[in-house]
Image 1 (spheres, rainbow, N blue to C red):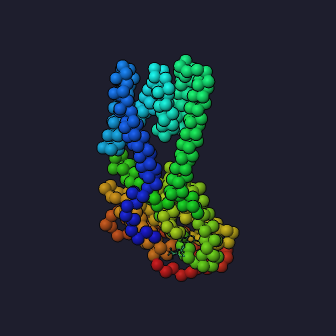
Image 2: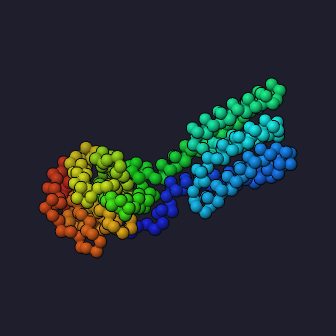
Image 3: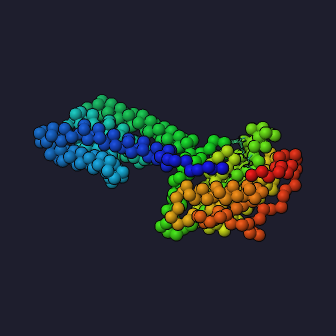
Length: 371
Ligand SMILES: Nc1nc2c(ncn2[C@@H]2O[C@H](COP(=O)(O)OP(=O)(O)OP(=O)(O)O)[C@@H](O)[C@H]2O)c(=O)[nH]1
């Protein structure tokens, strides 16, 4: 069971790490684009290309605003959408009036799209961009150059697309690996603080009350000792499956310790959650695991209170789980409100009748309860 809330859980949230990666990518692209393009404003001005010079000023101003917003407000100015638009327009227009000197900017502009836009939008934008550049180069250059430009720009886009797509998949896979338990497929602790905090906010802002259920298998050590660790693993996996089957789509199942699971029940009062917790314990104890391993579990349920932190909330549930173990296991205990002693068992929360063993497993063989 949890002894205490782990410090700094929010800082290790893998989803936030991915967001940090995106933010840095956007930040660096805008920073280096600004450095590269700012001098061109003067160059185009001196060449008398006033419209292009104005477009480049616009481009630099947008880049500067994105950098400032990211640094001081942690948000994307206009969602970072202006960079791709301006880069494409500037590159196409510059090619139309400057020929090859403008064309060179089309390549970094096309590649940057894949790192700034969602992949589907980037593909659509690049198809349009390559088509526009093909028309411009058809009008500007000899036919052989037109073919070279169109194919080399198309190929650059293809390579950038493959790279961005693979990086995106890698990010998704890393996030999945970092946020789920490989054995059971449940969420792990990495997002626990965020999920509980969002339920706390729902309570504070909208009076929507959520509950959390802790479930801990009883005498699980004996299962490992008697049937081996691999069987223990399979029991955990099957148990997660049975619990998951009973949950709603919005409910979230975490594995927060070896044989301890947590279910977050959004917009569920303690009394309603209690009914579910009872059903979960029944689904665990009613049928043997791996054909002949009888297992029971203990559970606690705690409704979020106004003004409490996620660690206090979890701690109340944890104390109630200790109580469930101390009262003889295979039962659900309601967590009391803060600073109140654990509630005495009521008739409707008493444990079900003891199970008859189907084999000589530890839970089935009536191992005496030791807290
Ligand atoms: N097979 C397997 N066992 C695990 C895993 N994680 C933790 N365990 C085992 O789970 C057992 C937990 O034992 P205890 O904390 O004593 O709890 P318990 O035997 O269930 O007793 P109570 O909780 O008091 O009912 C230990 O033997 C751990 O080695 C896992 O991923 N796979």
